[in-house]
Image (cartoon, rainbow, N blue to C red; front, top):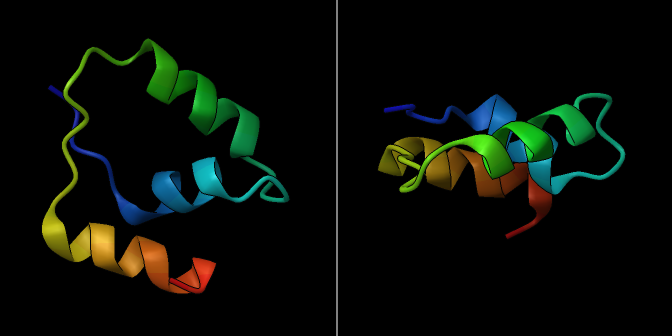
Length: 50
């Protein structure tokens, strides 16, 4: 089981992030479900303007 943190979520969503490709690939290879604690999900959306 992998619990995702804000940094990886933002990097996966932000195509300009230097770690974008690496985080997207890691998410694709990770067995489902992807677990994200609620506070991290909320904090991860704030930099994206949501």
